[in-house]
Length: 320
Ligand SMILES: NC(=O)c1ccc[n+]([C@@H]2O[C@H](COP(=O)([O-])OP(=O)(O)OC[C@H]3O[C@@H](n4cnc5c(N)ncnc54)[C@H](OP(=O)(O)O)[C@@H]3O)[C@@H](O)[C@H]2O)c1
Image (cartoon, rainbow, N blue to C red; front, side, top):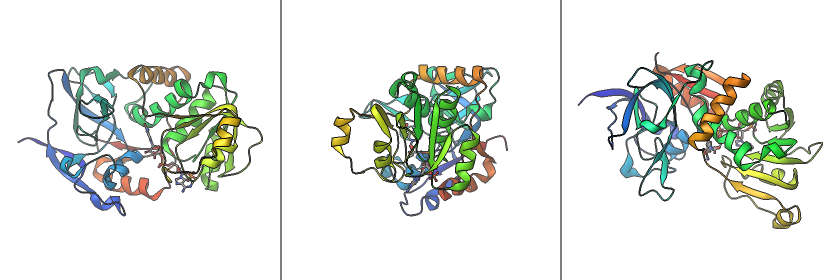
């Protein structure tokens, strides 16, 4: 059976997800239906999702070994440069869909198979490295701001946990949209870097000079109370992750008195990915890249993500 190089989960380890990571040969991706095609992956990027998978969140033992990775940019069978939209229709999943690496093998491999409809042409001006950052974290941030947060109606935006992939995307996008952007971080170095992107950086939990209309929340329990207190009447607190814990205390009096909307969201639609790519290409917005790591050192990339020192996206170069 022909094989290819891949990074995959062989087991689950909640305490030390890095111990559950394997790098080696896996079978070439199968096509579950006629409309699927194989993409040669040139660049991918890591997401916190990959660490959740190694911890066993969203996967079962029966699905192992599972190739990790949600994001990819590469070359389609006709030789066109493409961005891979990572959400795949999945009958049997309660959501009706899944993200690559949940039911179908992910992008951290030489090749990945997806429905042809999931291929989006690489816009002029964007590199494959840039594009590999966009389909998960950046798409999530885009939908949080636009469709869910209705940022058009907003003047000020708060982004919690400024170093993460979604958070740096939200800051860069909201600044490019001309909003006043506040961003929290526990780390002075990250505050300096987020300020360089055009946000007002504050310590986690610090009082803001004004209440905001949209809050971008991916940190969860550690920051949720601050998100609530920082919200203006009618504000949208948009939640797409809960890195620090998913069961915060919620003051319901504040929710109804301030008429807050707490809105959940996950990923985005293909149309939103087209809009995001066009926005980045037209407005010269480029993803915040923490580092580019050759595939041969993918374990080091995972260790860096797990260490929490990351600022922006870690890109994996599949040509090296
Ligand atoms: N639903 C979706 O479609 C979707 C898509 C992408 C990501 N996500 C989720 O969104 C979350 C963010 O993912 P990510 O990859 O962007 O970044 P991440 O690596 O999870 O980091 C996010 C930030 O969280 C902050 N943080 C972590 N623990 C904290 C704590 N105890 N107290 C305060 N702050 C803390 C850190 O900020 P500082 O160090 O700056 O304080 C860190 O920079 C994840 O849970 C992920 O699963 C969801």
